[in-house]
Image 1 (cartoon, rainbow, N blue to C red):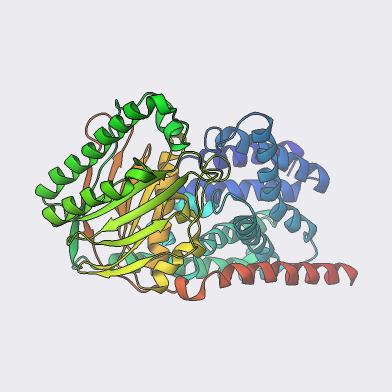
Image 2 (cartoon, rainbow, N blue to C red; image 1 turned 180 degrees about the vertical axis):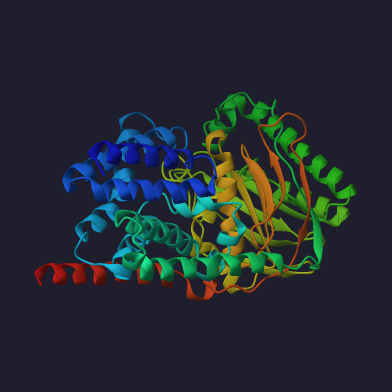
Amino acid sequence: MSLTGSVISLVLGATLLGFTTRLAIPPATWVSLILLLHATRTMPPILGLLALWTALYVTVAIGNRGVIPIGGPAYFALAGAISLTMAIPFALDRVAFHRLDGVAFTLIFPAAFVAVEFLRSQHTSGATWGSIAYTQFGYLAVVQVAALVGIWGITFAITWFASTVEFAWGRGFDWMTVRIPVVVCMGLLVVVVLAGAIRVALAGTDAPSLRAATLNRPLDLFAPGEMTRITEGRVDSDELPEVKQKLTTLHDWFFDGSRREARAGARLIAWPEANLLVFREDESAFLEQAKRVAREERVYLAMGIASIQPGDHLPVENKSVVIDPTGTIVLNYLKTHPVAGWEASLIRRGDGRVPIVTTAAGRVATAICFDADFPEFIRQAGQQRADLLIVPANDWKQVKTLHMQMAAFRAVENGVPIVRAAASGVSSVFDPWGRVLAVSDFFAPGDRTMTAQVPIGHVWTLYPHIGDLFAWCCVTAVGVLMVAATLARAV
């Protein structure tokens, strides 16, 4: 291929990949990686990798504007670092170019891609954000791979397909030359997709269900930025009475809404993350009210609460509190994973355990927002056979859809239905196969209450029991394959 053709391939691939930053278009990711890989394999090594990094940088910088919650030079520096990690698998693949052949050569790129995504999730503050596995949301047959080996298996499937197709492309699709790698890869991918499709087709619909509702805060109670200021504890003594009156109005809003939905048939009512603000000194009285509402209406209340102690070094307890229909607090959980920056500077962290309690409705677990972006954390719910996971969340407009979609993969990994109540985002319900049962967009006009019949019950999956074994195998495989490539070069 000419240099011009390689550049066109690079630009098209980067453009397609850019679309998937915010939109789940499953085929676009598969095609984009073929084009990007073809460009780097057909261009001179140094030029190709520099061009790739530049294209990825532009893609990341444009696609993540507003998604990454920082600005200024720090944003562009972070975009450069992210695009650099994305280029590493291509660089390793290029190093092995012409040193290995056949199936072994096609495995370097996928193993390296998984290794980089996995290690990045373990050692940076972004968790699994940016994994290409999430671009497959809605492609249920492929998403079921997460039930076996987590999202890393999905990433591997996409990148192995790209590596194999490009392997054949680079050899003119000469069947006698490429048949073994193509048959091995495509054969296994067909089996995986068929197995996933069968799993979804056989998914039961006869599980006991629970009518659930999610509420959201009133739009006109607080001035812009006021909730943030209160959460930070920046309240002067002379304005304290007025602020407390607003918080009382906020509490009544949620209690009245909970009574309304309970009387309409809901048995579980969930409030978003930190939507209920309460000063620590008033928390006991508030919780007594909440217990009374749950007891009188015979409902489960799952409340996202920000308990604030002005003047403390860490003034906020970001909580998920669940009260059962007897008026008993059965779960009181502090968020374990704050978002780096503003939130991390304010909140007291939890103990690193996903709490689970046995109730009349089943085994109920809870986590909060960013917690759900850590598969190794949420798999505690799968290990303990949770029948329902409640996730209060608080997003912003640019990430509302993407973050909602990411939660579906936790449902599949752990075989657990998820009720996600989101402020400034998309509230949603997923079944254990990742199917969307209900959504409600905070930014849509009209009533933002969401209701759904939630199937209650655990579905056994492998991932909670083997954890990230597959990802670690990919890390190991990269080392083995690169050694093999080095030895092949020496020979």
